[in-house]
Image 1 (spheres, rainbow, N blue to C red):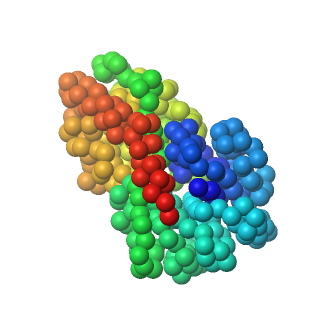
Image 2 (image 1 turned 135 degrees about the vertical axis):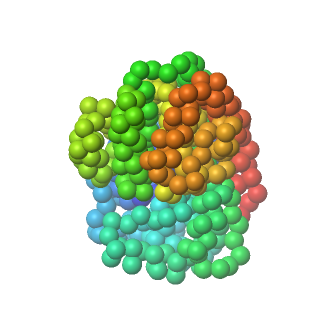
Image 3 (image 1 turned 30 degrees about the vertical axis):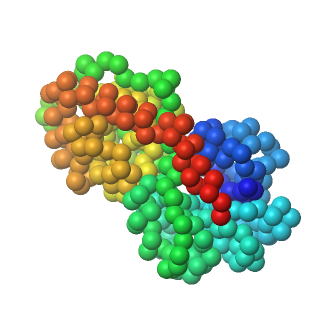
Length: 370
């Protein structure tokens, strides 16, 4: 089968890096694949890694810039039409909202193409209210052209139904995560002094990193010395740094920026905490679990699917600093629980998301024809 995979660009995010994960795991093996992107994005090295996987001639970048302009969008639309007409793909898979908008429009002129919308989050993020007012209604109006939906987890699949006009469609869960037995992981569960906490993700309001920084201050108020290693970048970085300084813990909060394999550096941290309002699959939490870190996380998105409270993580009903503090203190006082949760988390990730399990899923998604 010929597959055209259309994505906005190669920023260092879950959907973008997840595509590389699918390629490395052999998800598209046995099929002819071309990848189209509007722009190179901020993760230039990621584009190069993907090109190495599929061959440079199979990666089409409309622009080498970090972001796409209106002119780039127009050009990409016509590139998409040309690829569909000349290469004649059997399937077009659309990842992220910009690709979905342009790809659905192009698919209107190619009724023979099987159109797939790949959903990665239950809540679209827009740069402005004006963008939200345009994107949302247009995407829904064009959703009649979508023949199939892929989602990174069950929660995403269910919660994004509101974005689609009702019609008969196939749907599949395609997690953008793959575990490997050889990956480094935590082995010693004795606590450090100061306590070492870790978190990871894009620095945006939905992740609630400000509340996690507040939890560090609350620990300090209880005379518990603690530090936080934050792996990720985004528009909230300066505001979060100022907040840490205002709390008097600027020297305790360490911003490492985006690190592709951050969990290899965080194996000696004591606890991983995620306080997101909403998530898709949540690759960061899955990576922390694979690394054997004891995890505290809000029960949202894919965490509902792979997280078991008290068995492989501790779950929070709401993403509050107070609840995070309570659970962190519980783990601090119980090394047996920390070790049990960390070891079980790694075992669960290795079993559920192995390369073999992902290939079985690929066979179900791509092997049944369209």
